[in-house]
Image (cartoon, rainbow, N blue to C red; front, side):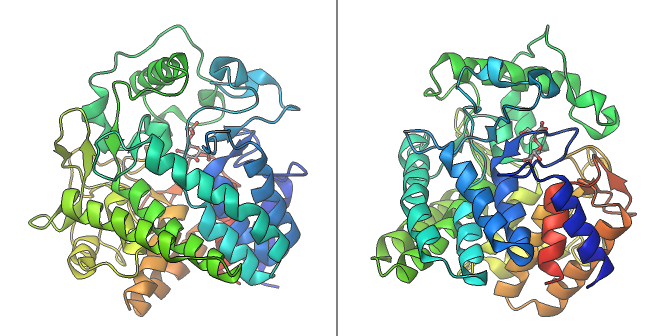
Length: 406
Ligand code: 9WN
């Protein structure tokens, strides 16, 4: 067995709680929603049973309204290990936010690795309910796109695209950050940003997790992943001999709405829209590249030109930078304001394969594996030097490395 793959497998074994995997023992000691999907993509090669368990565990925490919570708290972990913990959310053993819907893709991939009709049949209605919640409960702008109500929902917490919408949110004070005990302050969001996250989450909680508050944004990354998830759901339905056309139509509707309202042809880029102002936020972040995961994307050549141009220099830097390399605010180490994240690199590699960019996909895949191995599976890496940042032995970095080496 390949040494890097063995080391990655050991990371996943070390982060396994028995029914799910923590993203990181110290920094994120519970189950996170989109992490679990990426983790299952790697686990399926090591133990399909564990991959199925990971996803089933996440979906046991699904809410009655269909939402899949962004954190499922582990009852054995002391409450003070992560803030905001269960006592903040008042939502039983979960948070009340969501994360990008990459689960249908993961469920399908796990099934393809080791077919299990019972697993697929059990997960299918849950995935349908999850996507229905997003479509019907989150269309704040009335454009057929999902609006996220908190930066944490994008999975890209301190993305520069959220700075402008966040100016409406005064930072909360009087809480203790737990993340700084385990992470370098220079790699993490600023105190002001954290204060805004806490205020927004508290306001959403106090609305009974229903209202669109001060922050409502149509994120191209989240919506592209939903369209892709509907395509995966269509394939799952076909495996189960169920009708699939509705899922393909749903995917096409989201894709059309993105194309018509988030794409800027002069810029060659998908931008986020602030629902409150109706304007696009003209920040080039890696979320705007994620529509490349869609195989039937008419603007793929223009988007690829942006990806390989000076702003992201795909193929000439390490991974996929989370933010525009030419922007004054680009930061090589601070979280989602510059560093390359492995899940985004993995998704963009899939996109390159869809669009016939095989050599670039291979280079990106090789680079991701090399950086993961060199940084002891860092959470994110400096796109210019490949130096590791954030926590180490991070689960999705290890899992996606296993996938790339399998
Ligand atoms: C808040 C767990 C999560 C990832 C996110 C990443 C980070 C949490 C945090 O960690 O967010 O959800 O505490 O900073 O931004 O993508 O899912 O790995």
